[in-house]
Image (cartoon, rainbow, N blue to C red; front, side):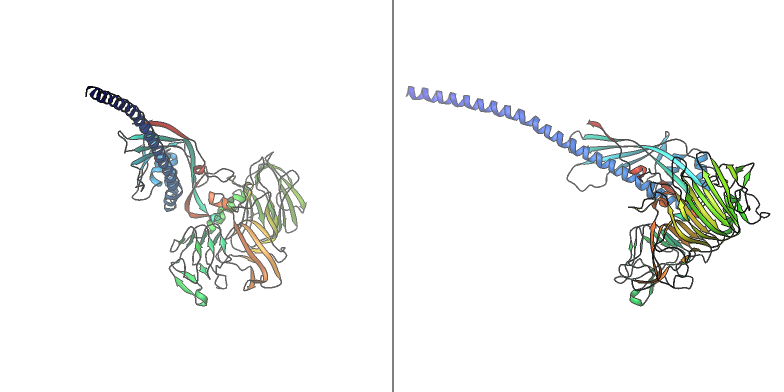
Length: 584
């Protein structure tokens, strides 16, 4: 028995030793796995909190874009008193302007104090299993003083901004936080009187002068804003595609309804008539009045240098004092020809015929002078070299004004070079007849359709007549410019549109603003019979606020965000994110 008991004791001792070793090994394992799990949890919390912080920053960027491109723009449209904007500029109150305009009723405004404007955001219900949240702050500072260029209803507000966002994981005790910061960006808001140049199509009466209804069909595509002071008419499914906002004064639109037209306060007539409005169709909006005779007199004043043209005989004039130009180019009497060209020195040349007089006018931007040469006759301003250029009293761009009609208008519009760009407006009291191609030099088209990167820009404006494509114009005509026939019955049309053979297509790079909708040709179904088809390509620079010089304005204001030569807006530029660390 003694030996057996001794063996039992040995077994017990060995078992206890094994258990002790196992306990030590378990302890070692546990002491290792707990920190590893904590480290894994910490890494997971870091990623989760960083993800929440980035979500907050992204929300803040989206909110800032919405405030500037949506809320502020809508508020500016409601405020038509220029003195309001002027007060913000005169009192150096850029931040107060942001606070008062960049919000909608019921939403939080920017808080202005300590020389900066701030807006704090917290996350909505994320709908995830992550127990956490984020808080983001937009901080906006002035980036210089606001400005108001003289002689214009334009107000410029420059800003710089930062965004800081903190993500917090609340399932960790204490909560685990991670903060990211968007290093400083900048944007500039420009508020200006809205010009008619912004419209891809504007009609006072959206029908032909005869009263014939103009239908938008599947062949209708517009990439810019449309407005009529009456109603639009839509036929078939689809019945047009519109990428920008469409507005009309009357509350009901006309739908073809398979040959049984009906008026509806709606944006479609399913399933028969289905236009596509990518930016909405607003009905019952206020009328937008075409410019008055007062506006015409303002333009004439710019061309004549505020001189009295009463004693002047028929001819071509460049108003000047002591050899220095003080206005634009003024044509008294009907102009038989107006041709734009670019010479071998890359200078714009305007050749004008008035009666028995022909003048060649060359603009030398490098030397800031204008050379006038008589090709035939002596009427008007004598030949010679004149200092300055014919860009009106307020120097907005080349202005050519005729107090009669302008016939045989054609040529090439000079682009931006090392010298300033050459925006030009050709204006007449009566009809303007286009006889050949009018094109921007060195232009590009799309996508999206535009004239970028050049900055040549043309406005064609008649006050009491029509803009006509003449009977001698070539097939497949190209016209680059913003066309406006502002008279009550003014139209953009084609001479002899209902006779002869088909002449191809008129491609307009710009927009058309008219009293009525002018006819271009006749068709049988989809087959052209005579005249031209239409290919109207919107110049998207107009949405950014570009406009021909001295172009008529509406009674409304609009706002825009600056963009670079590639068309990238300030708030779309990619900025640097900085991880500012984590903490409890």
